[in-house]
Image (cartoon, rainbow, N blue to C red; front, side):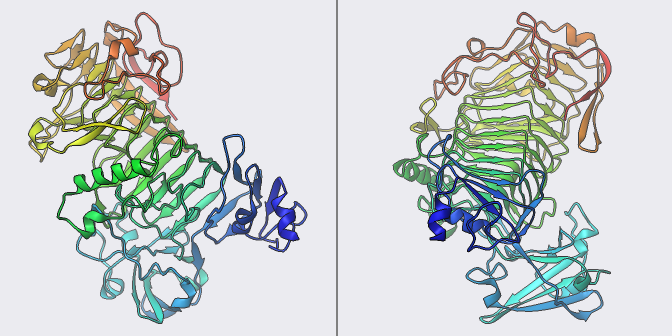
Length: 625
């Protein structure tokens, strides 16, 4: 009787003081978010009141359309925390700063993160086991080590950003009955502090696929024992859509995922780490097989993708802030602040970045702030119809701000501020770079025989594969950019680091380069038209953070007003060679780059170079976030 009453309700309320036998009304809320999810139907709104909820939400039902969603939201003005961890407060002192706790395996239920090790395609464990579990002291994660001796006598991890923090270590052992965790808390008394351990693989993740049209808004999610998420396997995240359509993930704070924060990924049925299990074929071939399985299983706009991920704060994840293979098609990732991704650097792999997407078909990635990550963005395979616009990237100094790997285009990069030491790595073709400010090196594949992998290109605005080919190099457009910076000596001689566009002098396919402004060491290409090179002028560029605000300090000369530029449109950009697809909007209409980084209108006749239409000569301070 109670169940039927809740099912028919439009609004369901949850409170830490509730009871799952209640009706779910404001005055009689239920206790757990999972209970509300179990009974919610399309059109229902689940409102969660303040408190900490230590549970994994596995939504059993989805909505029917954008207008008939299931909405999970925090109560207005209230802080709601959803954690994949439990508090541990019965530590026993071992020696010095080292304590231990022994837990029966029944404590973990069906999933024990201290038995489960991180694994998967393209994961590099660096010669040791890494568990999906984690230990936290007052909200800060400790560093797992592979022996008890390294807990008793910790040594700073040379690659970790927080050298002192890396001496707070933990180690675990498990048998059939119990699990023991040893931890070095330094001078802290763990039973007097908040000590938590990961116990759940996710915080919000449907076990089944096709749970569509869900909204998650206004929560604080943290501390999940997530598994590695390669493009050839199911991609579980702290929050994940699991091969669904039409989710909105907005206004949340997401932190401390062992691997990934938000995943817009593929399912398990179309492939699960086959390359790791059988390397008789190379990894690229395995992924091509996954793509064709996905097409057979209904990978298309009607069934998959079209998610919105906006205005979230994502940090302290060791694989990605946001990732997705195939499942992110037609999605928008906007207004997010992503930082501190892979800063512990205890493991490596080919899937690590603030945002890592395979098959960014007709996606929009805009107005995000990404910094202090192993890599800012990584657009891998089938970046087609993608637009990366008005993003702020800086201090991603382990690799580069944006990496384009074996894509055939068309993809558009416009109005971005790219300020890390390495700005762009390009092993693709069919890209357009328009009105960007780039202060770091560019790495462009010079030895194209090195890029012999054959990767798909698709029918325009579709997931259907039109063909498969390798990267020849070129077919790029560079218009109205400001490039400045200092060059470096690259370890990879086939991918030399350069400032400017001179590497296009030897591009195999045609390129279109015009109206760029080169400062300092930036070198123009012999193929450029109407560009200006000011080698004698050093444009000083720096970032200043003041609380949640970011200011760009930039010095220019009057060359910014001298470059003769034109408004960039679909007609100017033409079509990418392989896909024979125009640089256009996802609905097939023509586009114009007629607004700047701030959304202000550009001159139709002579827009200013770089991302700011109102940029002036001299030293300026511009608020960019």
